[in-house]
Image 1 (cartoon, rainbow, N blue to C red):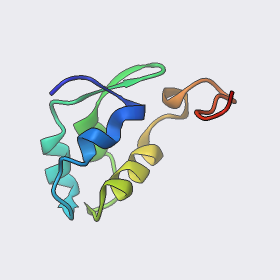
Image 2: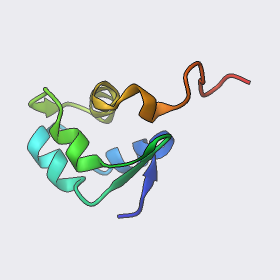
Image 3: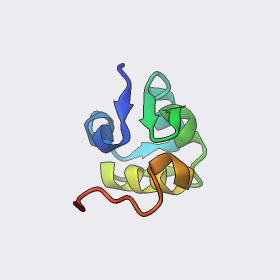
Image 4: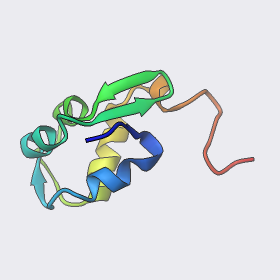
Length: 84
């Protein structure tokens, strides 16, 4: 699977069948490289760090990813998509 930017992650997460366990999601996303402001991370590894046992929806998984991503990975301080 190709590299994916954080802003385009929905397109990847929508391909999973929900509800999905954390282990299965991590396994299915193991070949995805997430491109971030400070470099790149393996999406499967990030999902595996989640405290959740399962995800009910794309939104659920994306919300959890936001919790495990380091703040600096998302963008510059005070930078917000949608402003400008």
